[in-house]
Length: 100
Image (cartoon, rainbow, N blue to C red; front, side, top):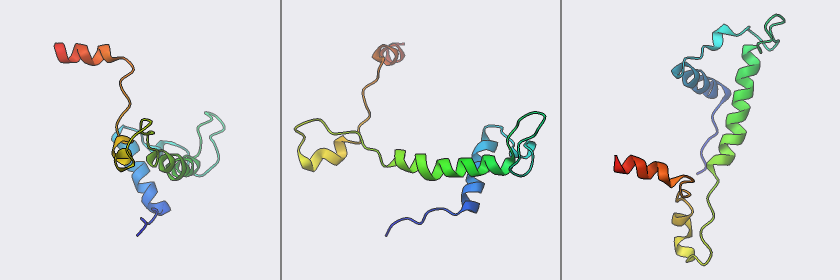
């Protein structure tokens, strides 16, 4: 059974909770969709709508991405190997952490 996509209200709760966790209060933005003419701040409703769209589109796309398995991989092991993280770009950093 496929998961049920979240409703707008559920996404609004998620958005507000995640932003509140990092200290962002959406209630400081002007109400509605019209930007504040003095400061240029976007309206609260347009910000939430934009974040909802981002969560429904980009996040869903990124969550289904799998790294390609190395060439010649046994098909039985492809799914597991495609979940492996890419090697670190700067391994000297992790080496320094392990040696200290």
